[in-house]
Amino acid sequence: MVLPAILLTLILGLIPMFTSLGWSFLEYDLLRIQEHGTPFVGLENYRTILSDDRFLRSIANTFLMTGLVVAIALVLGLVLAHVMRAEYRGRVIVRVLICTPWFVPPVVAAAIWAWLLNADRSPINSALMDAGLIESNIRFLTDSSTWGPFSIPLLSVTAVRIWNGLPFVVIFLLAGMQSIPRDLYEAVDVDGGNLWSKFRHVTLPLLKPILGVLAMLLLITGIGHFEINYIMTGGGPNGLTDVMSVYSYLQAFSFFRFDLASAAGGMVLLITGVISVIYIRSQLRNEDKS
Image 1: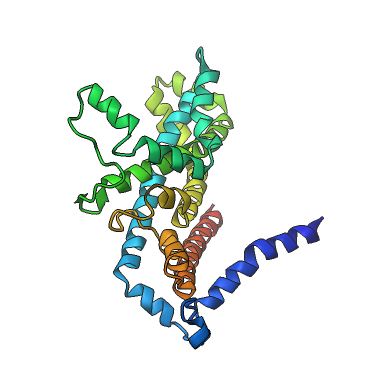
Image 2: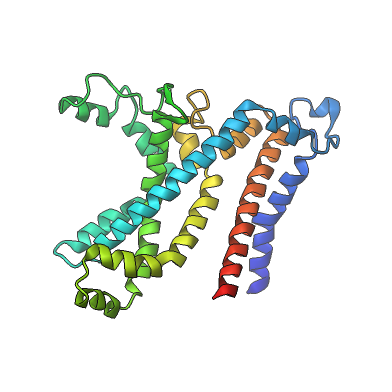
Protein backbone atom coordinates (compact mmCIF):
# COMPACT_ATOMS: atom_id res chain seq x y z
CA MET A 1 0.00 0.00 0.00
CA VAL A 2 2.92 2.36 0.60
CA LEU A 3 4.50 2.00 -2.85
CA PRO A 4 1.42 3.16 -4.82
CA ALA A 5 1.14 6.21 -2.57
CA ILE A 6 4.82 7.05 -3.16
CA LEU A 7 4.42 6.62 -6.92
CA LEU A 8 1.30 8.80 -6.94
CA THR A 9 3.15 11.52 -5.02
CA LEU A 10 6.04 11.37 -7.49
CA ILE A 11 3.80 11.48 -10.55
CA LEU A 12 1.41 14.20 -9.38
CA GLY A 13 3.73 16.27 -7.22
CA LEU A 14 7.48 15.98 -7.38
CA ILE A 15 7.97 15.26 -11.09
CA PRO A 16 5.93 18.31 -12.27
CA MET A 17 7.63 20.48 -9.65
CA PHE A 18 11.17 19.55 -10.70
CA THR A 19 10.22 19.75 -14.38
CA SER A 20 8.97 23.28 -13.86
CA LEU A 21 12.12 24.21 -11.95
CA GLY A 22 14.17 22.87 -14.85
CA TRP A 23 12.25 25.03 -17.32
CA SER A 24 13.02 28.11 -15.23
CA PHE A 25 16.69 27.80 -16.28
CA LEU A 26 15.87 27.48 -19.99
CA GLU A 27 14.60 29.83 -22.65
CA TYR A 28 11.21 28.19 -23.09
CA ASP A 29 9.18 30.55 -25.29
CA LEU A 30 6.57 28.54 -27.20
CA LEU A 31 6.30 31.24 -29.89
CA ARG A 32 10.03 30.97 -30.67
CA ILE A 33 10.82 27.39 -29.76
CA GLN A 34 11.10 26.18 -33.37
CA GLU A 35 13.67 28.88 -34.18
CA HIS A 36 15.71 28.95 -30.98
CA GLY A 37 14.94 25.68 -29.21
CA THR A 38 15.28 25.69 -25.42
CA PRO A 39 18.84 26.83 -24.65
CA PHE A 40 20.12 27.00 -21.08
CA VAL A 41 20.08 30.61 -19.78
CA GLY A 42 20.91 30.12 -16.10
CA LEU A 43 19.31 32.71 -13.82
CA GLU A 44 18.29 35.05 -16.65
CA ASN A 45 14.58 34.27 -16.25
CA TYR A 46 14.76 35.11 -12.56
CA ARG A 47 16.51 38.39 -13.36
CA THR A 48 13.79 39.16 -15.90
CA ILE A 49 10.85 38.68 -13.55
CA LEU A 50 12.60 40.44 -10.66
CA SER A 51 13.01 43.50 -12.90
CA ASP A 52 9.34 43.33 -13.97
CA ASP A 53 7.26 45.88 -12.06
CA ARG A 54 4.15 43.74 -12.42
CA PHE A 55 5.82 40.75 -10.79
CA LEU A 56 7.16 42.91 -7.96
CA ARG A 57 3.66 44.25 -7.46
CA SER A 58 2.28 40.72 -7.45
CA ILE A 59 4.70 39.84 -4.63
CA ALA A 60 3.48 42.83 -2.61
CA ASN A 61 -0.16 41.94 -3.29
CA THR A 62 0.48 38.31 -2.35
CA PHE A 63 1.87 39.21 1.06
CA LEU A 64 -0.71 41.95 1.66
CA MET A 65 -3.69 39.74 0.86
CA THR A 66 -2.24 36.73 2.68
CA GLY A 67 -1.47 38.85 5.73
CA LEU A 68 -5.05 40.15 5.80
CA VAL A 69 -6.43 36.63 5.39
CA VAL A 70 -4.28 35.25 8.23
CA ALA A 71 -4.99 38.09 10.68
CA ILE A 72 -8.72 38.43 10.04
CA ALA A 73 -9.38 34.69 9.76
CA LEU A 74 -7.68 33.98 13.10
CA VAL A 75 -9.57 36.75 14.92
CA LEU A 76 -12.94 35.84 13.41
CA GLY A 77 -12.13 32.16 13.89
CA LEU A 78 -11.69 32.65 17.63
CA VAL A 79 -14.98 34.54 17.87
CA LEU A 80 -16.97 32.03 15.82
CA ALA A 81 -15.38 29.06 17.59
CA HIS A 82 -16.70 30.50 20.86
CA VAL A 83 -20.12 30.92 19.24
CA MET A 84 -20.09 27.29 18.07
CA ARG A 85 -18.96 26.04 21.47
CA ALA A 86 -21.55 27.93 23.51
CA GLU A 87 -24.78 26.18 24.47
CA TYR A 88 -28.02 27.82 23.30
CA ARG A 89 -31.13 27.00 21.32
CA GLY A 90 -30.55 26.76 17.59
CA ARG A 91 -26.85 26.00 17.98
CA VAL A 92 -27.02 23.28 15.31
CA ILE A 93 -28.39 25.74 12.75
CA VAL A 94 -25.69 28.28 13.59
CA ARG A 95 -22.99 25.62 13.24
CA VAL A 96 -24.31 24.61 9.82
CA LEU A 97 -24.39 28.24 8.64
CA ILE A 98 -20.83 28.86 9.84
CA CYS A 99 -19.52 25.71 8.13
CA THR A 100 -21.44 26.15 4.86
CA PRO A 101 -18.72 28.14 3.00
CA TRP A 102 -16.30 25.24 3.52
CA PHE A 103 -18.52 23.01 1.37
CA VAL A 104 -18.25 25.41 -1.57
CA PRO A 105 -15.21 24.75 -3.82
CA PRO A 106 -13.04 27.87 -4.36
CA VAL A 107 -13.86 27.91 -8.08
CA VAL A 108 -17.60 27.90 -7.39
CA ALA A 109 -17.24 30.44 -4.58
CA ALA A 110 -15.34 32.78 -6.89
CA ALA A 111 -17.97 32.47 -9.63
CA ILE A 112 -20.84 33.11 -7.21
CA TRP A 113 -19.21 36.14 -5.61
CA ALA A 114 -18.10 37.52 -8.97
CA TRP A 115 -21.78 37.57 -9.94
CA LEU A 116 -22.88 39.00 -6.58
CA LEU A 117 -20.29 41.80 -6.84
CA ASN A 118 -20.76 42.57 -10.53
CA ALA A 119 -21.21 46.35 -10.76
CA ASP A 120 -23.96 46.27 -13.41
CA ARG A 121 -26.07 43.39 -12.07
CA SER A 122 -24.95 43.18 -8.46
CA PRO A 123 -27.69 42.10 -6.03
CA ILE A 124 -25.56 43.62 -3.29
CA ASN A 125 -25.54 47.02 -5.03
CA SER A 126 -29.29 46.75 -5.60
CA ALA A 127 -29.90 46.00 -1.93
CA LEU A 128 -27.69 48.88 -0.80
CA MET A 129 -29.40 51.31 -3.18
CA ASP A 130 -32.87 50.16 -2.10
CA ALA A 131 -31.84 50.77 1.51
CA GLY A 132 -30.64 54.26 0.59
CA LEU A 133 -27.06 53.55 1.68
CA ILE A 134 -25.48 54.33 -1.71
CA GLU A 135 -26.50 56.49 -4.67
CA SER A 136 -24.53 54.73 -7.41
CA ASN A 137 -23.12 51.27 -8.00
CA ILE A 138 -19.93 50.33 -6.19
CA ARG A 139 -17.45 48.79 -8.63
CA PHE A 140 -16.31 46.04 -6.29
CA LEU A 141 -14.12 44.30 -8.88
CA THR A 142 -13.26 47.06 -11.36
CA ASP A 143 -12.61 50.23 -9.34
CA SER A 144 -8.99 51.23 -9.98
CA SER A 145 -8.79 53.92 -7.28
CA THR A 146 -6.39 53.12 -4.45
CA TRP A 147 -5.62 54.16 -0.88
CA GLY A 148 -1.97 53.32 -0.45
CA PRO A 149 -1.66 49.57 -1.10
CA PHE A 150 -5.42 49.02 -0.70
CA SER A 151 -8.20 49.07 -3.28
CA ILE A 152 -11.83 47.97 -3.42
CA PRO A 153 -11.08 44.99 -5.73
CA LEU A 154 -8.22 43.81 -3.50
CA LEU A 155 -10.37 44.01 -0.37
CA SER A 156 -13.31 42.33 -2.15
CA VAL A 157 -11.23 39.37 -3.31
CA THR A 158 -9.59 39.11 0.12
CA ALA A 159 -13.02 39.05 1.79
CA VAL A 160 -14.13 36.16 -0.45
CA ARG A 161 -10.95 34.24 0.34
CA ILE A 162 -11.60 34.72 4.06
CA TRP A 163 -15.26 33.68 3.67
CA ASN A 164 -14.30 30.50 1.83
CA GLY A 165 -11.53 29.43 4.23
CA LEU A 166 -12.88 30.63 7.58
CA PRO A 167 -14.80 27.43 8.50
CA PHE A 168 -11.55 25.44 8.41
CA VAL A 169 -10.04 27.84 10.95
CA VAL A 170 -13.17 27.76 13.12
CA ILE A 171 -13.32 23.95 13.24
CA PHE A 172 -9.59 23.74 13.99
CA LEU A 173 -9.93 26.19 16.89
CA LEU A 174 -13.16 24.61 18.13
CA ALA A 175 -11.39 21.26 18.41
CA GLY A 176 -8.66 22.95 20.44
CA MET A 177 -11.16 24.69 22.72
CA GLN A 178 -13.05 21.48 23.41
CA SER A 179 -9.82 19.86 24.59
CA ILE A 180 -9.36 22.50 27.30
CA PRO A 181 -10.46 21.13 30.71
CA ARG A 182 -13.52 22.92 32.09
CA ASP A 183 -11.90 22.86 35.53
CA LEU A 184 -9.66 25.71 34.40
CA TYR A 185 -12.64 27.89 33.54
CA GLU A 186 -14.31 27.01 36.82
CA ALA A 187 -11.16 28.11 38.65
CA VAL A 188 -11.41 31.51 36.96
CA ASP A 189 -15.07 31.73 38.03
CA VAL A 190 -14.05 31.04 41.62
CA ASP A 191 -11.53 33.89 41.42
CA GLY A 192 -14.27 36.23 40.19
CA GLY A 193 -13.08 36.34 36.59
CA ASN A 194 -15.24 37.26 33.60
CA LEU A 195 -15.34 36.05 29.99
CA TRP A 196 -12.35 38.20 29.06
CA SER A 197 -10.34 36.75 31.95
CA LYS A 198 -11.17 33.22 30.81
CA PHE A 199 -10.10 34.02 27.27
CA ARG A 200 -6.92 35.86 28.27
CA HIS A 201 -5.66 33.51 30.97
CA VAL A 202 -6.98 30.13 29.82
CA THR A 203 -8.15 29.94 26.21
CA LEU A 204 -5.52 32.05 24.47
CA PRO A 205 -2.42 30.58 26.18
CA LEU A 206 -3.57 27.01 25.56
CA LEU A 207 -4.49 27.74 21.94
CA LYS A 208 -1.19 29.41 21.06
CA PRO A 209 0.33 26.25 19.52
CA ILE A 210 -2.79 25.71 17.43
CA LEU A 211 -2.86 29.36 16.38
CA GLY A 212 0.77 29.05 15.30
CA VAL A 213 0.05 25.99 13.16
CA LEU A 214 -3.02 27.65 11.65
CA ALA A 215 -1.13 30.84 10.86
CA MET A 216 1.57 28.79 9.15
CA LEU A 217 -0.95 26.79 7.10
CA LEU A 218 -2.83 29.92 6.05
CA LEU A 219 0.41 31.67 5.16
CA ILE A 220 1.77 28.87 2.98
CA THR A 221 -1.53 28.16 1.21
CA GLY A 222 -2.20 31.88 0.83
CA ILE A 223 1.10 32.58 -0.92
CA GLY A 224 0.26 30.01 -3.59
CA HIS A 225 -3.45 30.83 -3.82
CA PHE A 226 -4.80 31.10 -7.36
CA GLU A 227 -8.44 30.24 -8.05
CA ILE A 228 -10.39 33.07 -6.41
CA ASN A 229 -8.04 35.83 -7.57
CA TYR A 230 -7.98 34.62 -11.16
CA ILE A 231 -11.69 33.87 -11.58
CA MET A 232 -12.94 37.05 -9.92
CA THR A 233 -10.58 39.60 -11.47
CA GLY A 234 -7.88 37.86 -13.50
CA GLY A 235 -5.36 39.96 -11.57
CA GLY A 236 -7.01 43.23 -12.60
CA PRO A 237 -7.85 46.00 -12.72
CA ASN A 238 -4.39 47.27 -13.64
CA GLY A 239 -2.72 44.53 -11.61
CA LEU A 240 -4.37 45.60 -8.33
CA THR A 241 -5.25 41.99 -7.43
CA ASP A 242 -2.36 40.33 -9.24
CA VAL A 243 -0.61 37.69 -7.12
CA MET A 244 2.38 35.50 -7.93
CA SER A 245 0.34 32.47 -8.94
CA VAL A 246 -1.83 34.52 -11.32
CA TYR A 247 1.28 36.18 -12.78
CA SER A 248 2.76 32.73 -13.40
CA TYR A 249 -0.43 31.45 -15.05
CA LEU A 250 -0.71 34.47 -17.36
CA GLN A 251 2.92 34.20 -18.41
CA ALA A 252 2.37 30.55 -19.36
CA PHE A 253 -1.05 30.60 -21.00
CA SER A 254 -1.44 34.19 -22.24
CA PHE A 255 2.12 34.98 -23.34
CA PHE A 256 3.36 31.37 -23.73
CA ARG A 257 6.50 32.14 -21.71
CA PHE A 258 6.80 28.90 -19.79
CA ASP A 259 10.30 29.91 -18.72
CA LEU A 260 9.10 33.06 -16.93
CA ALA A 261 6.07 31.22 -15.53
CA SER A 262 8.36 28.52 -14.13
CA ALA A 263 10.67 31.15 -12.64
CA ALA A 264 7.69 32.78 -10.92
CA GLY A 265 6.65 29.37 -9.61
CA GLY A 266 10.20 28.84 -8.40
CA MET A 267 9.99 32.09 -6.44
CA VAL A 268 6.75 30.90 -4.80
CA LEU A 269 8.45 27.62 -3.88
CA LEU A 270 11.49 29.46 -2.50
CA ILE A 271 9.43 31.84 -0.37
CA THR A 272 7.22 29.10 1.09
CA GLY A 273 10.30 26.95 1.72
CA VAL A 274 12.09 29.73 3.59
CA ILE A 275 9.01 30.47 5.70
CA SER A 276 8.59 26.76 6.50
CA VAL A 277 12.22 26.39 7.56
CA ILE A 278 12.01 29.48 9.79
CA TYR A 279 8.84 28.17 11.43
CA ILE A 280 10.22 24.66 11.99
CA ARG A 281 13.46 26.01 13.49
CA SER A 282 11.53 28.32 15.82
CA GLN A 283 9.37 25.39 16.94
CA LEU A 284 12.43 23.24 17.59
CA ARG A 285 14.01 26.03 19.66
CA ASN A 286 10.83 26.38 21.70
CA GLU A 287 10.77 22.63 22.34
CA ASP A 288 14.41 22.71 23.47
CA LYS A 289 13.63 25.55 25.90
CA SER A 290 10.64 23.71 27.32
